Amino acid sequence: MTTADLESVLAAGNAATHLTPERWDAANRHLVRKALAEFSHERILSPERTSAGDTAGPAAGDRAGSASQPHAYRVLSDDASVEYRFSARILHLEHWSVDASSITCSRDGQDAPLDALRFITEFRNTLGIRQEMLPVYLEEVSSTLSSHAYKQWAGQPSSAELAAGVTRGADAATDFQAIERSMTEGHPCFVANNGRLGFGISDYRAFAPEAGAPVQLEWIAVHRSKAVFTSSAGLDYAAHLEAELGADALAFFDAELGALGLDPAGYFFMPVHPWQWENKLTVTFAADIARQHIVHLGIGADSYQAQQSIRTFFNTAAPEKTYVKTAMSVLNMGFMRGLSPQYMKATPAINDWLQELIRSDAALQDRGLALIREVAAIGYHNEYYEAAAAKESPYRKMLSALWRESPLPQLADGQQLATMASLLHVDAAGKPMVSALIKQSGLEPGEWLRRYFEAYLVPLVHCLYRYELAFMPHGENVILVLQDGVPVRAVMKDIAEEIVVMGDRLELPEAVSRIKVDIPDGEKVLAIFTDVFDCIFRFLGALLEEDGVLSGGEFWRIAAEAIREYQSGHPELADQFARHDLFAADFQFSCLNRLQLRNNQQMLDLTDPSGGLQMAGRLANPLAAFA
Image 1 (tube, rainbow, N blue to C red):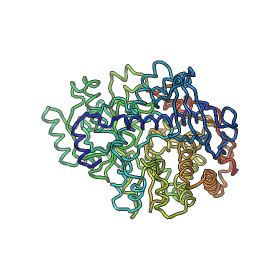
Image 2: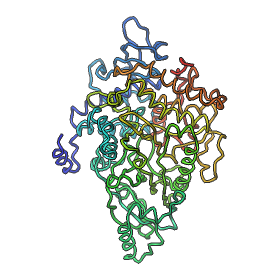
Image 3: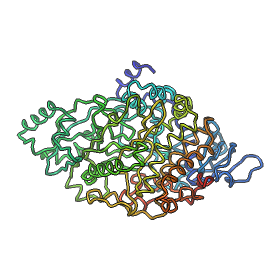
């Protein structure tokens, strides 16, 4: 599709041009494949092996990840009237590598098209979705299908083209954002991972990350009696806003307030998402607007691009400026995407604390681990909803914002940036971007992988052993710094809401004490087993094996080697290595889709992340072979 074609369609406004029978069929095959794979992985579905001479059910070797040849399987719907047949290999960590082209559906003995929405209703009892949750989950599945159809329609660069961009070193900001908007899958584990309930078609085209459309943020003034602004040490409100807006914009906003007879000194200026202003604030916060506790000021001058997290924006007009993260009352992947004003208060202090910890740790400095700090935050307290709503209610999280550092100033000459999600990206031709990066780098696959583990895995392991500190290190939360296509270090983001101190190895200042959470000792190691091994490496190892780049056994051997070398350099932590044994025979199997199926509007209580986990027995640990 040419730029002119795209512009003409966008000019049509709310046209759902991407929704055609062919694209819908392709989207359904894609999502049914993922549902079969991930629900089988989480042991929700129990496929029966039908290959000649085999007995029913997964073989013991399958569960151990030793199966190398595909087998035929089938699953029956709740009432046994619908049968799905498919071919799959079962790889390490019980990863079901399902051949999408092999999937067939038979309904009442007749061939039927693949339909992801019907799939969910056919297995509703097996999936355990409550009656009141099912329609909402179906809507999220429908939205996920629609976004997949859109991505087919819009087209994306090939993996080779994206890899070429990050290796040529021409324009770090442009290439970084090209990768960001080209990601097509969303979270690798979740079946319904592009819900975004609340978006209409015009909103989707304007604000979805994959649309890549320029966004200008709305600005409001919020009365200081209702709002709290906090910032990193050495940064005050006036200096921060002048750097973000400039003197002319600040003067214009002051004049807007003055024209209403209001004193600018009594207000904070705050960015809001255009969707949030239009759909929520003008209605839900009408009383605050009427009483001039909130005053609309206009549209900011800078142009931004939405990131994969939907509510975070990269400044494309001035890439060295901060990201802006805004509250959005859109339901996506198990949470309403709001921001808590209570959390905003401590956000800069938590980031400052973690920055100092990283800078003072030699092992982390040797591997270049860095973070982009959330340097300023503002939260607005609505007295009506705070009096009426439960502590974790989305009604308490409708109006907050934070500013996060740009990673660009951290780059050395010739370095590029890529979201770590890009390592799991597969283009329309089925080519993984990780394979293209390895090819571009000129390194042997094993050497490339070892450097990646050194940049990403080893720092996370060190934080667990040294501090019992865990990140939420999924692909969208990590930015890789690449040199000639090779990862040289990792940059962590989304800090204040998603790091947790799990034990007593760190003394925390009172200002950051909320990040300390009681986690049972046996679950602390899941910060690596679940968040890294099962949610990232399971997919990365499978992609490399399926693409003929590197076997699964070699993948895990190299991971084991990286951890063993780290451990040999830190004998003082031997008791922690035993306490959190990464080479154990197996580990507790914590399941993400089970969380979403149980409650797709709040998967977890963030103040008690352990209490709501959904376990499904234990998974064989691929590192155990190298113990």
